[in-house]
Amino acid sequence: MRIWVVIVALFWAAHSTGSHRDPAVGDAAPGSLGDAPARAPAFSSMNDEHALPDFASIRDVSAKKAAFYTYMLPLIREANAEVARERTGLLAMRDALLDGRELDAGDLRALATLERRYRLDGHNTWVVRRVGDLLRRVDVVPESLVLAQAAKESGWGTSRFAREGNNLFGIWCFSVGCGLTPLARAEHLAHEVQRFDAVGDGVRHYLRTINTHEAYRTLRAIRAQARRDNATLHGELLAAGLERYSERGIAYVREIQSMIRYNRLQRFTEVRHSA
Image (cartoon, rainbow, N blue to C red; front, side, top):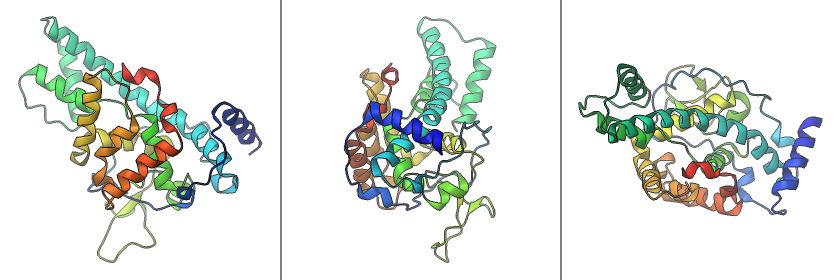
């Protein structure tokens, strides 16, 4: 715990916003991903440098938030970096096609692999369209949005699902034993809350779901327009595409946007995301 106190102190000195009361700090509602995939995709675990800290033991709200950011940001950026590398390969393919060159066998294999990973059928014979369809899915999610949803869904890292299942996003699963059973689950429901080996695995699953599920098509369209405009990716703007993340719909969207503004989370979105 001592090392976390030092880390938090250094972090907060650089990013202090003053002390404010935030009602969302105590909100540990699990939420859901709408009609999320029945099974989580297979991920190799990230080697988290630290297990999930005991955020509940940090009584000062500002210090708790600083600790949360310090812990989550490296995991978010590592997961986004993996997606960014895939996107770089796709952009190289797009540039080759725009130059009138054909993709070689290796490129086509890589393209097919990404189509399977990002749940595109790949039946379109026009390779330019295949690359374009993937570019709308294979892209980062800004830190501001990931932080806001993780904080909201996990009560700033204090929920049972965060502590026992490394799940900070309220991600559901639908096979017996795949996760933790919600204590207040209605009798007619059968979902569990997905358990992950590491928090980083949950981050990666969250990104993959945002990037593939039909429920978040609008979010991806907003992001694609920002790319066309060569604009920085703003979490507050992308949050408009999250109506189906929660049964609360637009009220949930507005709460996420409010959290991003109130906590100035856009400061954590790296400039390179606008490239």
